Image (cartoon, rainbow, N blue to C red):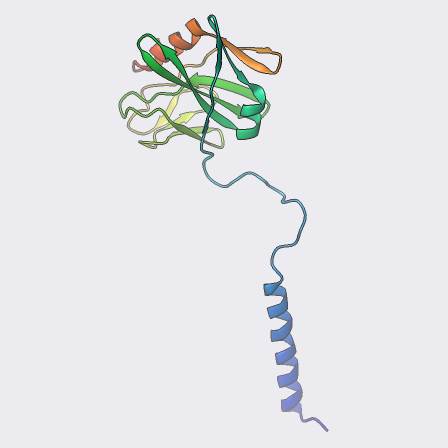
Length: 170
């Protein structure tokens, strides 16, 4: 016959064995409830298509990456832009932070974060929220949806870029 002390040890050993098995089994298979990565989403650089005064980027690139950057070659040099998805809306803005000279932003929820100085901007409005460069709001660019592409006029891109170089809204 087993004594009470031995029964208690057997039960304790069984509980330790069960908890070890559960801990070592790892995550269950199947879809994750929230597939979004934590923290800021870094942008992917893409090449726009330029035909005359029309600059186009594929909607699928924005949908797949959530935020993309692209450059437009001008006589004065390359100028950078970002396109990102917030909910069902796509936004296109100038992608420059003049005081710190950054041309890179990440998307964190509904906030744009400068990759260099960490200044934050409202992704829906382009207004500065907090940080050293917050007085340089990110101007938006109008676009049309054409054959699966976001089509913009070169003049609108240039105007948005120029607007972002100066503090405050024009």
